[in-house]
Image 1 (tube, one colour):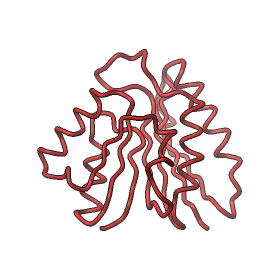
Image 2: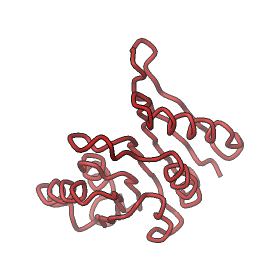
Image 3: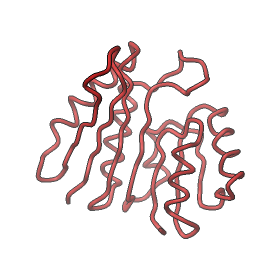
Image 4: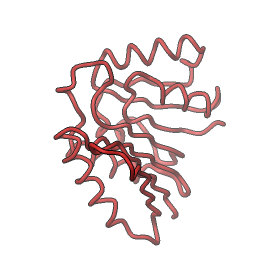
Length: 168
């Protein structure tokens, strides 16, 4: 309660609503998306649950989060890939997602958490997942703990998650 958090990919609003419930009225959620339809869907879900007051919706790429957010963020969520139910040609990109992750780690408070859900089941998603996984695996273990959570009995490159804990 009362924390500042970021939904780096607002999408259809499910993660934004979840975060808004967690931070409560004293907290702040910064939610980013480049697609106006995503932000409209998110806004509708927030209004239905009377959670709009603690959320700032930003129509911008997640790589711009440092322009809006200050240090001391407790959690950042990334759900990469494409907007479910929308045009699949519009996907997050490896370069801008990696830039956003780097920015996000600098914004995170000590003991802050970052979750990244990756979708390697399509061509751009495979590039993005490999790029991000390669980079986070090189983070110094004294400063960050990086956990990979994935299915091992699924076919066709199922989604998987990375969880980063900022230790210092």
